[in-house]
Image (cartoon, rainbow, N blue to C red; front, side, top):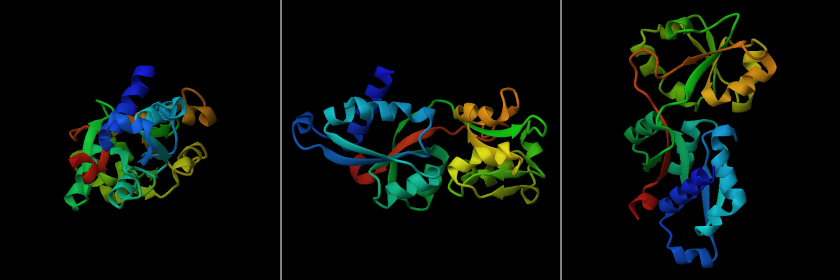
Length: 228
């Protein structure tokens, strides 16, 4: 874990390209937009903050929650955050819309994106999503690439209904059977098993199913930081 959080601190410092001597000066304020509310795969960032690793690199870091990759990208692009976390495919789409951001590093070498459903009404393959309701915020990365995913897997988009929910409301929406499925990270499984029971939650890797491409979360920064 120490090696991991040290790497996180180093990566953020690299984004801002501060000199080593800056650590002895007043730390530079730096806002990092997470792609979600705090969950397990964000642990390294919080440990680095608590251990003071960012401060050692000359950074006064604020970790800010977001409502999906689209939201975190918007924060970086509009200057509300200096860098952030987002799924690569959503970053590419934003760049096509002239967003002023750049990818500066990768977090996972394989995407954790997934579709959760209940054992009594399982979603086992992409086509099973037809006739189903899926919960996710509008800025969620899986919603952002849904048109491409649906086309690649020959899903009739008119037979799928997306339901807008807040990030933290996904779990209750599925557990209370208000929706048939939820788009989320595989790392969120324990959150769903807690109210639904172990063995009652079905997982279907989303973007790696069928012929669509794999997407992985990445660090992005404003072009000014990356250029420097």
